[in-house]
Length: 324
Image (tube, rainbow, N blue to C red; front, top):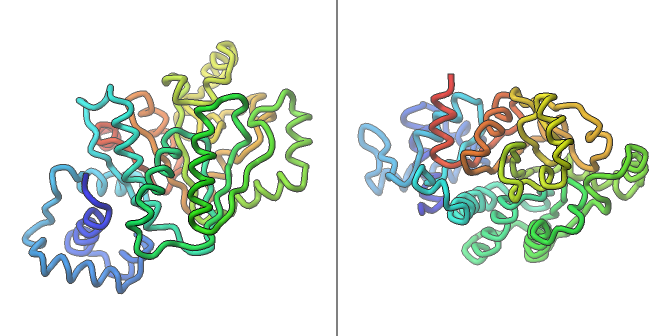
């Protein structure tokens, strides 16, 4: 697997020499200093990386990333080297995308930043990978606070992976972990209102909305229910009703249609967490997804401009680019 610094160096060269972006534009795009951009350019020239075009290694999908960024107006695309032959190896897909997302995490997290995360196998994998890589990070951010963006998934041990990973990482970075002390789905709308009116829960929701970076998994209503906490909780009748309303996927428990717009249902009045519109308005929202089952949901979020950054597998990236 290619290291993030090498991947970033090559993307910077492509932006500078092929796309004619200025060093200031590149620095802003990748959230690094202009001096660091200059150092990358000098290193690349010294290493003879520049000829007529940038030579991306076969395992790095730089051209796919650039095409996704241009087509869907993304701040950045991260394409993992996962293709058709790997589509049935779920553990491999999650490990691969998690490692690349963790490299991105370490690049963008800054001192005193609040980071929002949701219950997700992909997000938990990213946080675990970030923790494993922590000793390789030269300048570790300090006082990083993590906030859960959705109430707890009651009675599900696998979904506690995100909580545990965020707890370990926040402790290592001298920060804090804020959790919504409420179920993600309440019994009635009145119960939801009572939870959201509680000052401590309201404060955590506000903190999550104002985070400097937010990382989300993406669910498909037709996907493997083991991977989608919200679908797993729904009764079959409720899932069928949502599909009739046009729902094809969920982000942070809230369902959306093929254009990335929220699908209104009685479930919205029972969820305790950030909404699709909350996520769309955040400054840096990162979606992480792999597998054919997530394709339509990912495409919808891109159409709706809900995400600023996408981490996805190579097969899905090619389909997204080919889509009319």
